[in-house]
Length: 105
Image 1 (tube, rainbow, N blue to C red):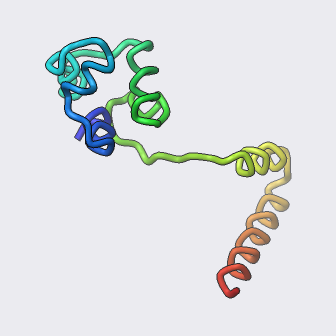
Image 2: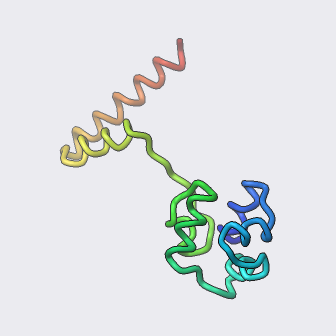
């Protein structure tokens, strides 16, 4: 299943509804789902907004695992990217410890 189709079905929308949102026909939109036509950047941007996902999930038109980060995850990543490998392992161990402790509560 193409990523276009996956996200459309996830939102319970028809091809016609997505086409109307984009200002094209449902048949024209189906060409994206069936890999008969490549979407331009503006179309990808509109689809990412409609489907509430990133453009990257449409680039290959194949399903990719969707990974999202909240502000804490970005901050943690930013602070940890210059740590040594040993300290990264320690940080991961600490996170696992806190999760285990939280699960026990």
